[in-house]
Length: 193
Image 1 (cartoon, rainbow, N blue to C red):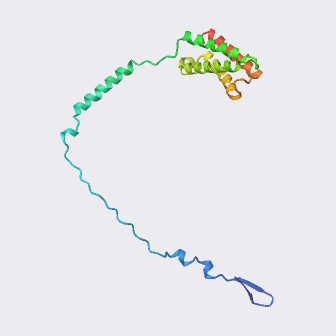
Image 2 (image 1 turned 90 degrees about the horizontal axis):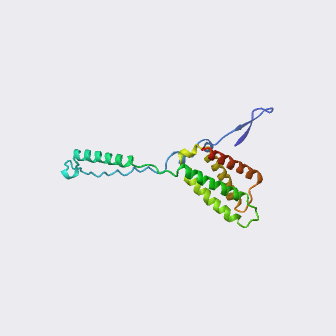
Image 3 (image 1 turned 120 degrees about the vertical axis):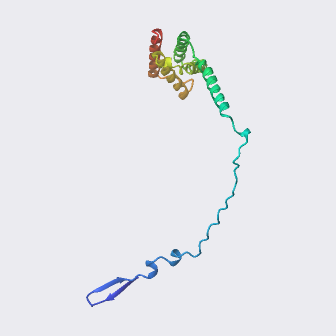
């Protein structure tokens, strides 16, 4: 609230008077209206633990040692004779890779108006999926150039047909790149790489 005070005829002073309610918070916010209640006490239940153990609940230490030792021996014996399953021999890898190469070449060079395009793509997809599933976990093959190039070419072919459908023709630039990768993979395969 503003008040006008005349101290002299030439000066007018304006002072602001504030009420007590606007400066201080209301007493209801500062002072709680109800008294806080105390929490109920926690009741504990006393349980007694028997300090005597019967002989049937303890396992003799000799028996425990025997079981531990025999389990170690049996586990070591059985695990030592387990050999990892190999996917295939080198001759089988070469033969199957050459089959996949020929299937990729025939499939991607088919005319888009050919009625067998969809079935050829489906066969290529099954063949490439089985080839990849069989050989991608072989650590010896991962370092081979033929595997890397073949995997890259199959990835490009399957990615195209998944994205655009089995009847969509592969663009010329992509087809040239795929055929180059297959050719390099075939050369590496013949060299034993």
